Length: 498
Image 1 (cartoon, rainbow, N blue to C red):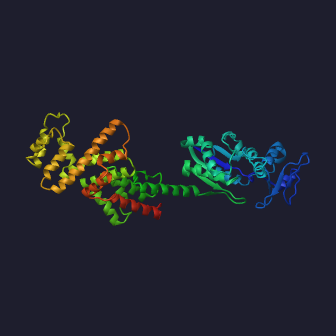
Image 2: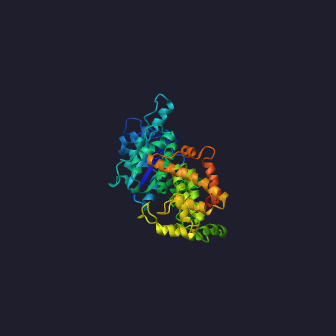
Image 3: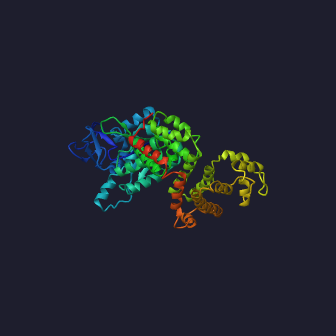
């Protein structure tokens, strides 16, 4: 796992100690900015100016021009060079964190119009040569294990366009992004140069590496310090993700990668487990939540699992179908309705699925009768097997059509309830047949397919109204309560709640 240090270079990253310049024979006007000169060099070199914030130091007015001359006359300058805005930070980081890769971000603008005075000034302030000076000056870059600038990044165009720079760093940092699993930490010092570059780079790295990014700041004359901005930024991003997942009832996506709020996590996993009909695995979530949420709310969510009935399973299945519809996943919606249609009748018949599994025998052909199934039917009513035979129901094994006629037999004295079941069953059967046909066509299900089958006057809304009434649920049932409670915990910011 590698540690990476990234530094953006500005116009003040390379400075001079005034007394060292004098010791090296340089001449300049200390009262203002002027060309620096040296007796051994015939030409005037470049403009310098006093650092008003850092006494005893001088800065280069035009870094491109100055940098080129410094490298050309390195033997005269190297003793006076200082990097006060980055040296302390590097040394501080290196105390506990060996650096494997140094990356310097510098400007070398090629898209400027030199006939424009402002563009010419911007060009003269490029830090392209400062990058080389820093690598020559700082001993850390001389070690063999540190690449010689292979990873350095030049900003060559649209330096003040943050939209462009954000996209560009996605390209420029591609080698880092493609090898994320090999990166341990990224130490970032983005204070030099142009704000748009620094902000774009910071956001791109945080998006890719999250809290692996350690953001540093060093002011002139002060100790370096690590900022918590990446954590705050990621926390806020994750909060927005959680709100979106809660809005969509996507409880399963609220995992430990986006929240450290343990109450929120366990409530989300509890809700997701129920919607996935994995009621047996949510008990561990309930064990954690016991004594960490208010008693009345705990009793509500605990009771449904502790006293798990087929009705609750049906309600959870039905809500999961509604959520699939909310997501416009019409194929999943149909699949869940298909499962619902069969189990809905079994609940009405008060028949447990486990009892049916005992009599099911896949080895019996459709032409023969299953004696165990016939005996089971006789326990409901001695007349039931013959009633099914008269309605051309094969008695080889339990099936959905048999369940429906069993319900008609049992509800023959309750005409109103029977009509409600018949209406729902007939519409669910239409959707079931369509689902099977679409599966063979290998194409996604569209909302229009469902509406055509159910008829425009009834449609999906009509079906849901009937199912709501029959199943005894409105909206998203208890999952609306769970969602609202999780939003409350998110607002209360109980990140450290144990």
